[in-house]
Image 1 (tube, rainbow, N blue to C red):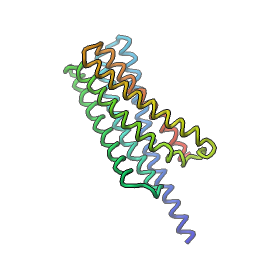
Image 2: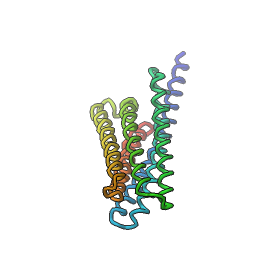
Image 3: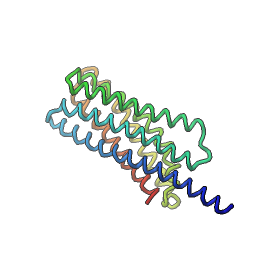
Image 4: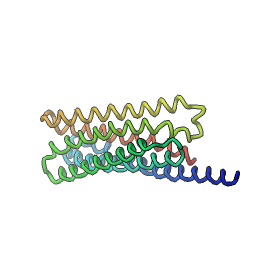
Length: 226
């Protein structure tokens, strides 16, 4: 019986580590792409091919959000494999969050490509900023929900529980604010008020959120299989 119990624990730990590695890979790619989007928008704000870089940043952010959708799925799967209290509600949140991020990413990629082709970029990119901002708001809730259960599997959780919780919720709060800011910037840009500049700033904000999410979650996931 003891051997069976040990094998079960080992299997659960293996499931957790497998999904944690998938999440780590996804958020690492998200962070790298987010960094690229930040770099593109900064160059664009320096008045170097701003319209071109705005469209490229829009596509990059869309790809980053799609990877974030994959990370959400892997993170929920990891917790499902370890937690007995995983409920139908949790499963609905998992698929809802993942689907929303994938859809937002696909919409952003499409709008960015159309903008690259010169089709109403000052309308399409601000619209993408609104979509991306809405996705960030949803993602911030998912990150806050997942952070503490994930942290319990890290070696430093017992000694640094309060710090880990506060850092996780602070990260989710920043992501929420950046999402709201992106929506506001997109709406203002659609009204014809400095659309190029505000669209670039919106992409900069969302790229920064992708970079932050990739760094925070990647660090937490890597502690699982160190």
